[in-house]
Length: 80
Image (cartoon, rainbow, N blue to C red; front, side, top):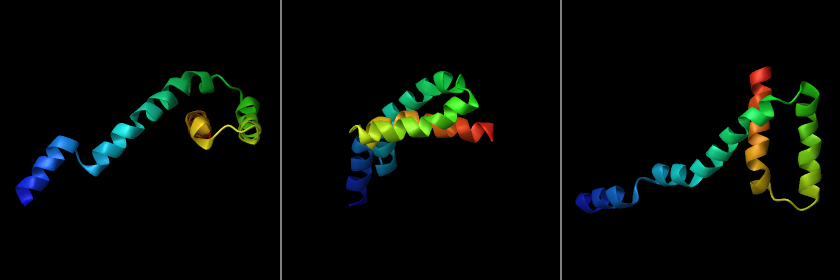
């Protein structure tokens, strides 16, 4: 049975590898936004929260906001 598990892991990857593969495009989008977010002033960075709230209220999904929101949070953390 161990051989079957090992074979399945080689073919499909581990659970962590599958999760990472699924999230890689999101990570790439976050990283691509970094130069744009870095250019924002502190006031503009703080205003992002209101922009996100407005976009959510207008029906945009959390998944759609995630890359920009994460890039914003990462930049805010770097500045503190």
